[in-house]
Image (cartoon, rainbow, N blue to C red; front, side, top):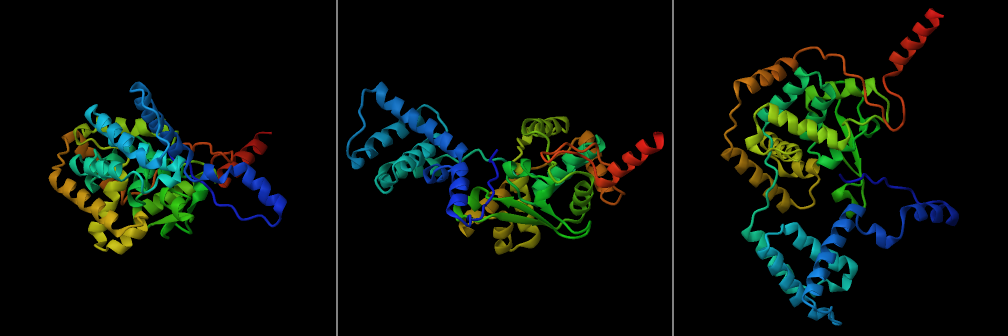
Length: 351
């Protein structure tokens, strides 16, 4: 899960700026996120071990590195390694020595060839019917906040890490009927541009559930449970509903939401804003593959699963049930101010 990074204002004095920058770290450390740098380090070390096992020394001239990296790519291709190891190796080497950019021509060509001949095993997009079935299952089992997280992830086109890090204070909403603005901070794309990102949610049923949740817990309360627990809950729901064969994963929420959004609005420019893609070409490829996958997927719900799909459809027009006890957030405390006042009144009455 990617950690959300908050922007900070430049300090008014040299002392203030020095203190803040000391907490942030050096500029070299900030060029890539810690998790990304960890991946780069593992990949580059794997390349170094490859050279050591063959008793090959690193060349002194950058131009002579390309054939060695190319041999390494051929090696991991034949060994059945994932493409991410290849891309992390090239990116990691250039991160350590930016002047390598433009020097690894053959290696990058091999990586493009790899991509052209082996399609990545992407998470399949979650169809609207599959989403409704998952949400209905969660509602039936009184997992109301989990149900809400599924809706927010789908209609907000959120990456899994973005969804899992959401807290009450990250969501701005004036009423149960008003549009919700979700602040994401410096995300994957936002960090590249140096700008904080946000998305809007307009789906009516999601808005009323989101408003209820916001009123029931403190600003620091997380929407999702601990990442490993939320992922387990997602996988358990998929298994319980007999949807395992479709290989849905948490990222299927974003892919399914993007496909649904484009099919509903039919406007690529609106999708670019909501999905926060920098390139229209990338978004088009993303949508085309999603639509093609959905067209090839014949979702067959078991009688057991159809019960929960109907449960969701009924719930859309039913009054909202009382939420389960809110999870304690980082800011401390749980529950609304009203409930706290009521408890204080009861204590006074009992005295």
